[in-house]
Length: 195
Image 1 (tube, helix red, strand yellow):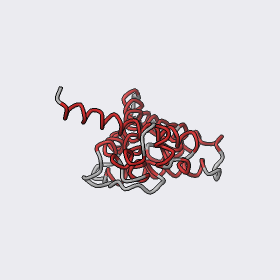
Image 2 (cartoon, helix red, strand yellow; image 1 turned 180 degrees about the vertical axis):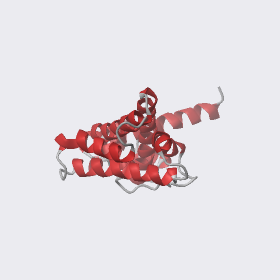
Image 3 (cartoon, one colour; image 1 turned 135 degrees about the vertical axis):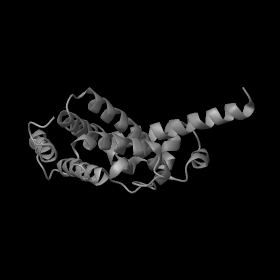
């Protein structure tokens, strides 16, 4: 192994450590607790080392968001591929999406609520973001009408899921009716009795 290869591997490991520490700290105490000083203490590196990897908290949050999208894509894919019919797949993906948001609120915030410097909905979007949206798209595509813009239909489905999550988390919608709301959303996309 060359010195250059070893340095690159060590750099990648430090970046992984920073992102993991930020994610864990945000999940435990919220994003306000995530500061470069606190992260430097958590990972036992100096702040200049942290800044040699990331420009600041926003760049760290963006890295966390990318990692979170990769995790979400995996969960959505597992739900979609385990389902039978198109309706079941859409329902499974909706359930997996909302479960992810409920289990990982700080991660979800970094991905879809807080301002991060990531290109969304463009070809320049990181692969993990495209993969997560792609899993939603794969669940929506079979139920799209001929000639319908599948991308816009997927964005609308995603917006419905995000709205349910956001309103529930803020206490504006009671948690106990979540499954019924999700079933209503699915029902408007795929009528009962549709495969």
